[in-house]
Length: 317
Image 1 (cartoon, one colour):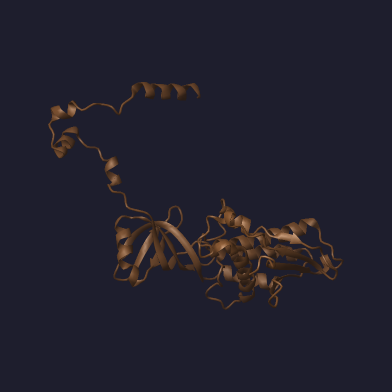
Image 2: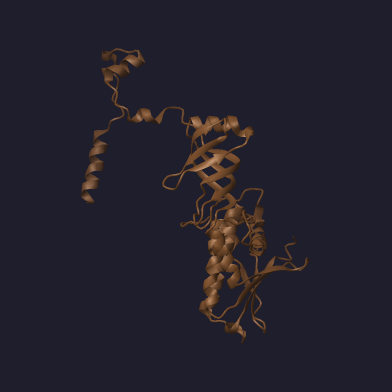
């Protein structure tokens, strides 16, 4: 897409509240906030940093990507705002995976509009870019329809193709809320410690305290790598399609498309650190006598430094 033709998203509100082409600033703030949250959550899912809807900080490049610019001015007949994708800047998005590039905002807008249009009660798997967190962000628009707004529409235009769009109404929000309450499948990413690998059934368990553990099903081609990772209880990142129980944001089962080891197995057993060993046993294992062990320099101990640290702690109580 040419730099001279940035993607635009037309936001249109219709209803008694905007009959005079005016809108209270508080309501504009509410709608804009809901839209930005929904787009941010879609971007989180698309960039494999999900699931969305969690608390805490979001990647800087995701926040920047969905910070749309308001252009033009309201036109008569209803309340309309043109929102424009921010200028592309690779330097602002260094954390992005190469296959997403600086077009994340355009991907998020298109996925949001097409996914919203595709939502219905018969869905068993959510559209691309959607997960339960995105559904809850969309459900948040329901408050808008309690303030004399009957419809919120979104239209995508880039000046070269036919505009595409969708409408959000009270009925569509009701569909979204019903989807939240039913079992559903959606794209997800989980991270945790790999345990209990069964290479016969091609499944394993990923422990993620304090959240629930997840059963993962993997491909035959990943059998050896998953088995090795499971032996060392390594930290892994699993990407795939997940099954969500009604009302839950975290999945219980994932059909993995990829399993990536994040941290390799330590070259020693960390449990040994906590085991009490007698000095004679250690000397015997090292093949040295007790007298030789006693002659080893005690260079690791620095009593003066320890005393200074304790004094500093006491002084600041």
